[in-house]
Image 1 (cartoon, helix red, strand yellow):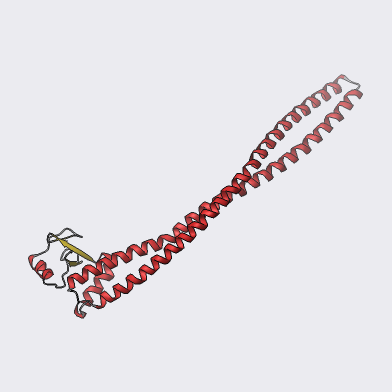
Image 2 (tube, one colour; image 1 turned 30 degrees about the horizontal axis):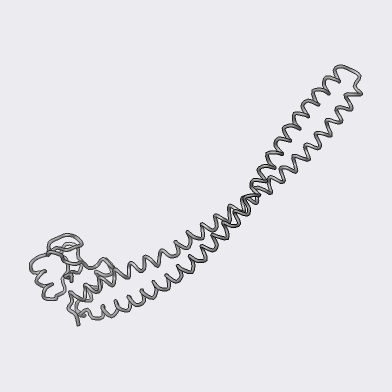
Length: 233
């Protein structure tokens, strides 16, 4: 059975490793969510483009209906113009015809612009579909890789926890109260190496007696930071 100082060193290593494993495990859901968001964004861009094309087609149709109606109104005005009997009526009809023709020109320009925009967005659809296909393939590959990694991390965690349980069981029973209290308070940061007679966690020099106790494989706690001390290899 290893001495208490060696045991603390092994326990510290195991607890820090377990903490690192847990942090990696905890990151997995966030990493999956990030990749899912990338895929969802590609799909959203496609949906937005499809909706934009639909709106443009509706706009084009509505303006074409208005254009046809306005042309009909111009024809009506021109017929009335030919039948007018007064200058006042003639001038008024001329103004109406001019206004209607200007409206037609404006509508034709707006229709042309909408058609151009619709065609441009329609051209984008195959590209967006390829982007989605690529994003789905990348997500599938990522998901498989991350799930394999997660399984490995959990297996390592299980082994580490088992080793930690075995190491904890070797701690002399009279040290359990202090050990458990410090572990509960500081978790994986509950222990510290002593380098050049100084606690590596709080950088406080330990007493000669404490250093002597460490050399004698006794249970020693830093008087400054309250961590369990051990000598490095």
